[in-house]
Image 1 (tube, rainbow, N blue to C red):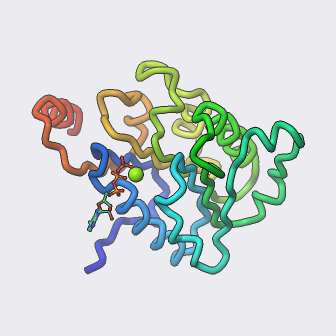
Image 2 (cartoon, protein in one colour; image 1 turned 90 degrees about the vertical axis):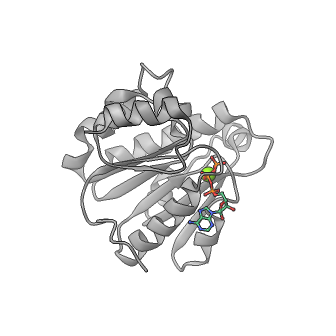
Length: 194
Ligand SMILES: Nc1ncnc2c1ncn2[C@@H]1O[C@H](COP(=O)(O)OP(=O)(O)OP(=O)(O)O)[C@@H](O)[C@H]1O
Ligand SMILES: [Mg+2]
């Protein structure tokens, strides 16, 4: 049975589950529907296997990010990357420092934010971008507050709501919660969700 996830709704979304809770699996299924509906997306993943199956779909561009190489050559061709409607960004190997990876991801996001046209930013481990849970990443905040007007939407994927910025969450129309078993987590969600 295919559930209607209202993927044509131009809204931000929040996907939360503890590790192994099924976030990536669920998002993968949603992205397949996005693809069928021809909504342009870019996935920023911190692991390389999560969404690799999507690459089998015609027209999905795999971008393997190697920050050291980009730094050395000074080459990050954002313009040609932006020409692809469906993009999966992954680290080129396991040794890549997460901070270096996110710096490249931020640069890509910044560039795409400035371009015309629709784009859905799908961000795995999105808590990593915020300085801490009370200080949102400035670009996230911009996209969350103003993105809808520019056809730019964001999906935050994270492990624990308590560790995620509340302002960003409050901008998400839909929240998907999986495998919430820790009592304090359940109480927190129950108190926050109307
Ligand atoms: N609805 C489902 N039906 C069948 N298998 C599932 C389902 N959801 C998740 N799985 C399986 O459970 C495992 C963990 O799921 P997944 O990788 O999506 O978790 P995750 O929340 O993204 O974890 P992490 O925080 O570690 O990234 C995977 O092997 C996945 O194939
Ligand atoms: Mg995952």
